[in-house]
Length: 175
Ligand SMILES: Nc1ncnc2c1ncn2[C@@H]1O[C@H](COP(=O)(O)OP(=O)(O)OP(=O)(O)O)[C@@H](O)[C@H]1O
Ligand SMILES: NC(=O)c1ccc[n+]([C@@H]2O[C@H](COP(=O)(O)O)[C@@H](O)[C@H]2O)c1
Image 1 (cartoon, rainbow, N blue to C red):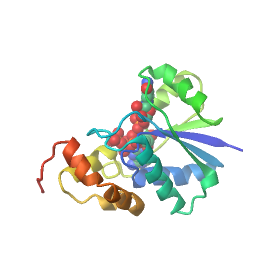
Image 2 (image 1 turned 90 degrees about the horizontal axis):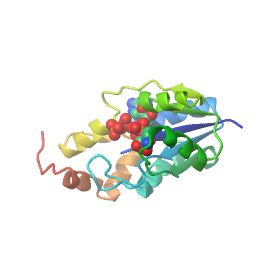
Image 3 (image 1 turned 60 degrees about the vertical axis):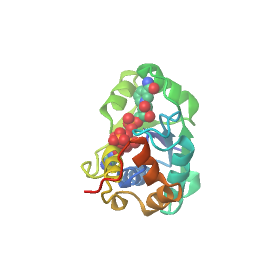
Image 4 (image 1 turned 90 degrees about the vertical axis):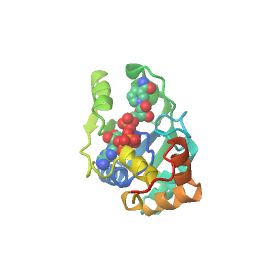
C-alpha cells in the first residue's frame, strides 16, 4: 500500500487539481488530500470553508470515476510555523510515503526535513489557478470552464459567486 500526501487550499478545486489527483492515483494506491488553511472561510482569499471544500472535492472525485476508498480528505488549520507544519501535518494523516506539491515552498520544507517529495508540474497555470478563478468570478468573467462541472454546480448551490463578490468587494462590475 503506497500513499501520497497532496496539500492545498483548494479555493476552489479546479481542473489542474483534478489532473494532479488522477496522475497521483496512477502512481499510488491512495491520495491523502489535505485541505489546508482549514480555519479560513468567508474571506476574499479563502471564500470557502473547510467543510464546503470537503463536499466540493468529494462530489468531483466520486463523479469522475475515483472510488472513495482511494482518497482521504483531511482538513488541517495553519499553525504559522513552516517547518513544524510539515510534521504536524504528518501527525494528523494516515501514514504516507511521499508529499506531492507544485508549491516550491512546500517542497522545500519537506525536503529540509528529509521527507520524500514529488515536485508537480503545473497544468496550464495561467488558467487553472485559484487566484485567477476567484478574480474572474469577482469580475463577472467566464470561470465555469476552469473547474470540474461538479464544482461549478456546487459553488452555485451555496451562492458562492455572490459570496466572493461580497467578501472581495467586487460590486457588480462586468468586463
Ligand atoms: N494548474 C495546476 N496544475 C497542477 N497543480 C496545481 C495547479 N494549480 C495548483 N496546483 C497545485 O495544487 C496544490 C494546491 O493548490 P492551491 O490550492 O494552492 O491552488 P492554486 O490554484 O495555486 O490557488 P491560489 O492561487 O488560490 O493559491 C499546490 O501544490 C499547487 O501547486
Ligand atoms: N506554517 C504553516 O501553517 C504552513 C506552512 C506551509 C503550508 N501551509 C498550508 O498548506 C497549504 C499549502 O497549500 P498551497 O500549496 O496551496 O499554498 C496552505 O493551506 C498553506 O497555508 C501552512
